Image 1 (tube, rainbow, N blue to C red):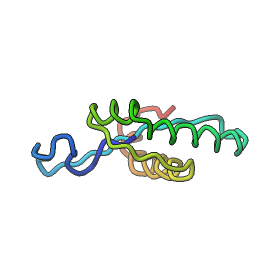
Image 2: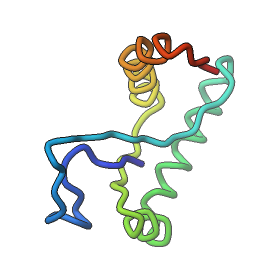
Image 3: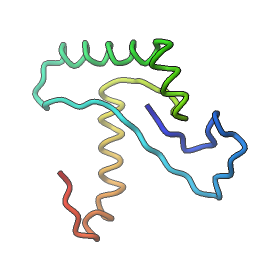
Length: 96
């Protein structure tokens, strides 16, 4: 599930004031989880995101549904840690 960087389809006339943001949500599990378990969970989540009830509710909240693969979500997490790591360290925040 993604909060869009571009204008939202639900509020296309709202100004972005030249700013953008990106927020994503997903599920993680233990690093040594079997690939078959991860694949089954991923399939179930992606199917649930396509059901009318789930899709409709998330769209009501202004979210755009993306779904994807464990590899894609892992790459997003890695890029966000690299992007925001210096800010976190500069503020002496703890990454958990």
